[in-house]
Length: 284
Image (tube, rainbow, N blue to C red):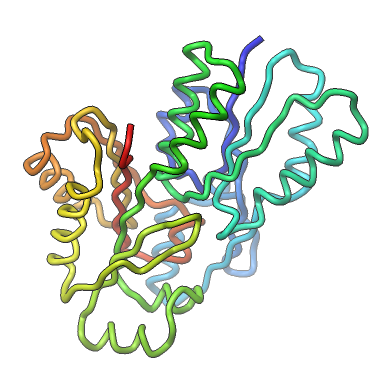
């Protein structure tokens, strides 16, 4: 008997890592052009970003109740134990729906071997927590040991990001119309963080170059033993900027291991093309 980890598509992990770890990833939904798509199955980020640049509107929806119910029922009589790590409950109802399904299953079955945890994180910040859990499970840690470490990493994960066009944050209700207008006129780039699952503005600078420099500096201020970590960089249709930031981080802090990936549809639909994020731990 072992412990298996389940995640959802908001973790933005590269497909090669998902396949390497045999990770089960449940898709959130992307609504575009009047159609509903399963994230990372029926639609790829490049298609969505092209549509957004043309002025198209994209919405997202949580992992459906039916998906959780079907999947979790399949796991009830299996010998393994399962931990579902969910996209932040402050940004999606996915965690709450998973918990509803688990509670209902407990009414029908004597033993339910599934536990849901709110990552309070997004994108590869969430993904790094999932990877830590996978490593612990592979090493033979118990379910309770893994849960305790997941909560430790949730507490210490850092998300630092900026966007290419603040108007996308305005459309998603993350900033006011006035803030978006002033930022656009003055070429002000916001720098944001995630605290207790919520997006929090932590700075603003004039121009994208200065924004990236500020973000790299903040990694040094907040990071713990960066040379011993895997640092993740996520970009929305801007691999050139991601590679530039990787070089800056290597030069400044000697970081050796990176994950670089495209921002997925769920996160990217709200932050827009040009988003650039850095994820790391402030304690390891």
